[in-house]
Length: 280
Ligand code: GLU
Image (cartoon, rainbow, N blue to C red; front, top):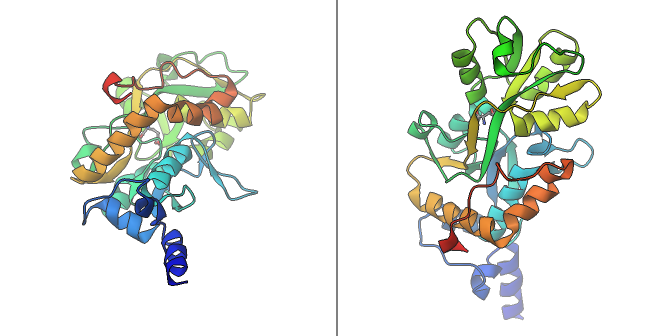
């Protein structure tokens, strides 16, 4: 009876995989051992980006490629993908939430940059996106980034998108908001001429209004997505890099892609980091 009770307790706190030898043991005093003990992984993610990080209004479930990545981490760390708490994290809050310990990990269309790496630690890239443009279907004047000269463009605060637009298009008028979903009604109503950010995000927004909007489809910069964590947590980073390397080889990455981005018929050629043969 006592053994049974111990087993039930182990299941409840998510220790079972460790006890059964299914999951690896983590050295004490690491982020991994703390999360396994706590039994819950806290992930900062977007809530308004269909296909990548989206809170379904009806079910409350978080869907998208980033959510799939997060669930795989939770499964490995705690034994179940259900042991996860998602916290909405807009672009400008990502470094803050990591530094303040609001989340263990940010998985939120988060590009790896040198500036950000001064405040947080990134994994290796798990996805390559590209910055693109979303316009009104009837507007034939915008077909590449240089056409944005003198136009009004909506994008999000704290993003690489806003920085690149400023640097690339002199004379651009920027409407900078907290989240890309806010840009869509402004575009449809004609208050701005375009929305610009990663193709991953624009694809999801476009899919909600395919008759009204047009995705230009000429990416003008490559955006490597990494998972972000507390600065200098190299043990956590190395562990996560090992997981990512494994998913690129064992079909998990492809399954996550097909269940999310791939639903629209898009292929993963330019998006998937090359698996390293040594890991396969
Ligand atoms: N990937 C870009 C970035 O990290 C743009 C998308 C976003 O803001 O989430 O800034």
